Amino acid sequence: MSLQQKRTQLKVSIIVSDLSSAGAGRWGGGGVRSFLLAQALQKLDYQVEIVGFVFGDEPAVIPQSEIPVSHVIGYNYPQFVHSASQVLKKLNGDIIYAMRPKPTTFGLSMLKKLKNHRPIILDIDDWEMSWHGGEKWQYRPSPKQIFRDIFKTNGALRYPDHPLYLKWVEGMTQNADAITIHTQFLKERFGGVYLPNGKDTYLFNPDLYNAEESRERYGLSEYRILMFPGAPRPYKGVEDVLMALDLLNEPDLRLVIVGGSPYDDYDAQLMEKWGHWIIKLPKYPSIEMPQIVAAADVVVVPQRNTPAALAQFPLKLTDGMAMAKPILATRVGDIPEILGETGYLVDSSCPEQIAEKIKWIFQNLDEAQAKGQMARDRCVKYYSVDTMASTLSQVFSQLKK
Image 1: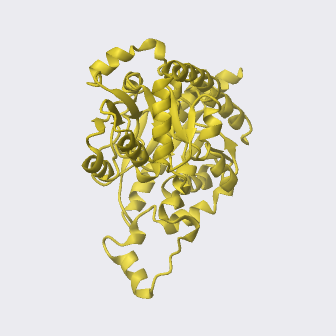
Image 2: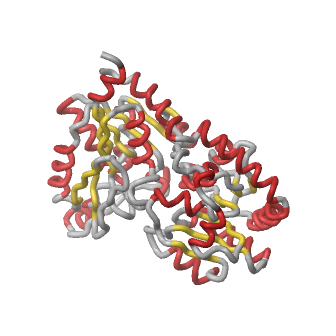
């Protein structure tokens, strides 16, 4: 029996903590880490399913792909025990791929392994504790607070992914049979195999799209377009670009934000202060993102130097690279390594440098566009779904059978 035939018989269950439209489904079921991994595994002829929870009132993801997706309504403790048992029944893969060291993913995967001894791969694409203060976070409640946290209807410890539980599970990562990570920051913290996010470079192919037609389609023809094709959050540095536009004060420049924030009202705050520079486009399915990015003159990735930014691989960076766009980014985390010599880098949190570089790019647009083509070539070589598949093939081949 060939290796390919063996793979076809093997099934991988990817478990995700949040399959809602605010989580893994925020781009219509594609373009986020769990779906990129699934696409890469399909290229290796594994059967793949994605299983996860939907908490609260957010709608479940409606997948825009052939990847089977199933979800369970998640509740807080004690009802979470029932939700968890439903997910465990659905995890019938020969290999479990847990997304992040969370109780709702890796914790349940370890419970499943106790019963069926299936290998677990843990993927870490974010440092969960960075959202709670990182190493400084501590839980030192009074007896009265512990009672409230456990027994009140909305008690903090009833939440399945409370930071106390995150910290416990984070300390168990050595129990995974393999770990994959996507930034050097996470590799230094957790170890594992470096597996950067890949782009579907067949879909994100600038030869398939016409920039002028895209600008007209999305109402952008009158402007020179800086594009941020993601959800704005303070650490992503969008404010620095907007301050740079204040400095330049050139009326035909616009920052296009695609999708907005599913987490809070931060983009509304940006609109209130800088609405004259911003064009907001709604959230589109991931399959339409290449058409949107085609409309950009420059893609901006102005990350700030924070633990949250260091732990993340900005997918919008490879959106721009794959579409051969000039990239303006900051020297934060892995960004300089990802771009190599194919983009333009400035210091973090420095609107003056951003303004200067924006002006330079538009004054030297032919050169900037040539660099964009170099970025496309680099993306195809190092940051494609095909490259992810090649790395995953090595990871899976080393699992204990």
